[in-house]
Length: 329
Image 1: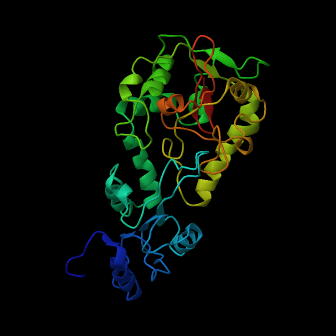
Image 2: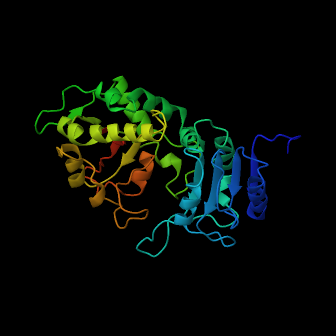
Image 3: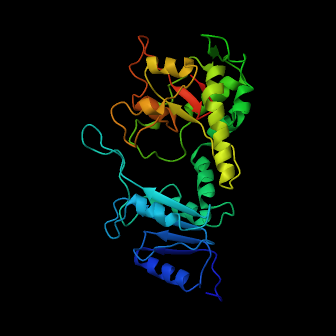
C-alpha cells in the first residue's frame, strides 16, 4: 500500500471485506468506493471520502435503506454518499416503472455512473457535491446555456419581471416572441438529453414538430414573499449549517411540471403557495412517495400525458420551473 500509493480504492461484492480490513487496521483512510454493502461493514472512517453503491434488489447482501442511512452517518460530515437504486411504486396495473439494481449493479454501466462515483471520492467538497454537479453533464449544451441565461436564483429570475408581481389577479405576462428570454425558455423546452432516457417514450423525432405557441411569465409577488423566497433562504441556511457553499445550478435546477388547467391556474394565482406537495403526486399513484413531481425534460411531461386533456384546439400547457424560485407557463 505504501509503495503503490493509490488515489482511490474500490471493492465490490466479497471484495468489500478487504476494504473493511484495511480500515480496521488503519492501512487506508483515503477515497473509497464500496460496491454492495458487505455485511462486515459497520462503520466508515470519519476522515475518508466514501461512496457506497447498493441496489434494493441485492440478492446476495440484502439490506434495508434505513440500515444504509445509519451506516453513512458513521462517516465524516459531507464525506459520504449513498448511491441507492430502488424499485418505484406500483402502477395501477401492478407493474413498476423503474427497477432497482440487483447485486450486479446494471445502472453503474450507464450514464458514466461508475466513473462519476470514483471521481466523487476525490472531490474536496465531498462526494455528494461532485455527483450533483455531474447531473448537468447529462444535459445538452443548448439546455445548459438556456438555464444559465435564465438564472438559478430568485434575484436572477426576477430581473426579467415586467412588474413588481403585486397586481391582483394578473400574474401572467406574455414573453414577446423574438426576445432573448423567449428564445431561452423555448430552448429549454425543446432540448433533449444527450443520452437515451430510462423511460420508454416516443422516438425523439416526434418531438421535432412540437412547438411553443405562447410563453407566459409568472409574476406572483405575494406567493414569492410567502413561499418560495423564504424557502430559498432556508435552503441557503441549511447548506451553510452543513458547511456546504450554495452553488447555483447544482443546488437549484430547471424542471418541467404537468397538470390539468385547474391545478395550473392555482399554481399561478395562489397568493401563498403555488405547488402544494401534500396535495400533489402523479396522475394515478405516487410512484416515489408524496410530493410534487417534476421532470427534467418537457418531452417526458408531454409524452406521459401529465398535462391533462388537450384543449379544444389541441394545445397543452406545461410549467417550466426553477424549483423554489419562479415559473413560466
